[in-house]
Length: 307
Image 1 (cartoon, rainbow, N blue to C red):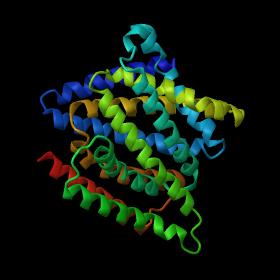
Image 2: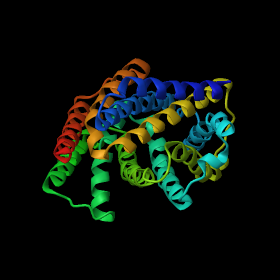
Image 3: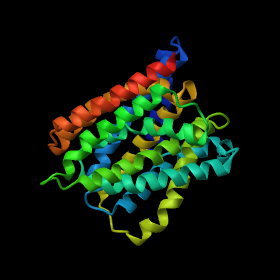
């Protein structure tokens, strides 16, 4: 029943967003989809932090994406698996492998650091995307991109640095979270390439399949029994994750990555608010300052890119 509800909800969201944004330019529609993705991912992060407190991160990683596949089953049954046959199966598994390794670091750090810190560190992903495009896709790295990269990493040091001071016990977990950023950036670069010849649904379905397959062996080695509410939480996480990735892929299809980064600063606001309401996390001044510096660098370079 929850799976059918999720499929109906996703169709309703697409219909309503399309109805209210049909008159907008593609870049503006991409921003709307990006805002939706950010909000869904922030709710997902808060839920996963709750769930990851009591079970092994590798099991949480597998269940998150396995349940993401479960909620897509009604769509697969309705349209047939042939409708989601990828044109480039190697690209799907490459993306799944990169995302799986990044998720391992992300889930290991998630229960140990505040949501606002996690979001601020996550703002570095667009900067790693620029570096990756320069190193592997031979895109030009103009001076604006170098400046944004330097400012972004300065912001990271503002967030992470105090955690290594006397009394700060989560510095290494902050570094683990930072280590996930370049891997997610590589995953997003592959996703952007896949949107040229794969549908949004195909990318979404095969992400759930590949990450589940890569995560399963280690999850089995660290398996523990779940309560009914934990199973319900993971099913909800699957719905939120699938919805978030759907919005993100729609955004990537309608505009360049750099054009949608200006809305990411909203994620710091949402994560700080949810961290305060759910976990009594009071955002530190360093997290706010570092996050604002990283987001300012990202917004500035995105505006330069749009010209």
